[in-house]
Length: 353
Image 1 (cartoon, one colour):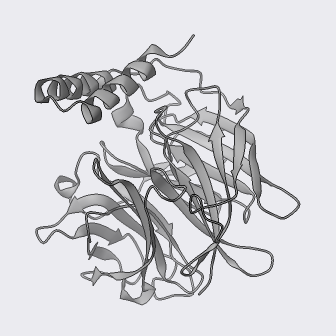
Image 2: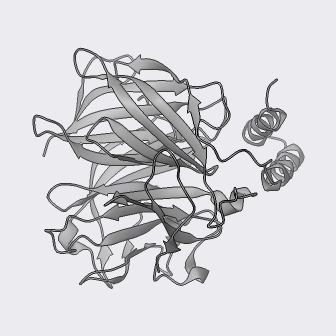
């Protein structure tokens, strides 16, 4: 039996964006807000194995054969689906082994562990060994409402997962135990005053800097669109010699959805823009690592930008890793918002520096 709430949600989203009459749009918007505020039914906190169907994406620019886009070289991608509501809504991911085993979090409050299968050419061929588990609080209870479990960012180091939540803003620590994830072991001080954080524009990026760089392995936290008085994006170095609040310059209506440090210490940011006229766009921006620190306003050059003429969707998750031959790799995943109008994508590139 289909999940009625998801079908109703999708119908309301369609009405809100597709119907020009203001009264109907207003009704759809109010109804959607009410629907999303209703607590979800509790589910068992046990690990659920999920079969995921994947279609390989061989061309990134739709209708064209080229693979090189500025410094990026497209390797391959996947379009994925599964027969469960729990799969989707991926908002952040990190590899546990380079290009193979990964952990992700969803904005509906799930842990996702999986492995990338590859074909004979080394291109992504599928998502296998997929396990899902609801996030729980310190007492082992499943969060009853979306506002409590809206996970948006993830960093991993030394057997620990650091997760950023929005709506009820916090950055929490978890022991990384893929077969039995427990509740948080504590929270991290994110330094930015809570009143500066917008309800659903909180911490979209958590990334550990290289230990050999100027940030000395510090955890960096960046919001999606919590802006200061000059319209710049709030961020913080949470520890280390450059600890303190800094900001990221915002350009052209793009918001930050994830980020990861490159081997040389620079920060790669994934950004997204959406308007009814232009649809979804994404881009990658490179921030010099030595520019990040307390009181700084940082900016960087755009490496690549794409719109709906490319194989993209609502790109929210990013990681950087090293391939066996030494190549710097960039992987991205999309958040389908649990909508039949959107897709769960995995995209993989070589970054030529």
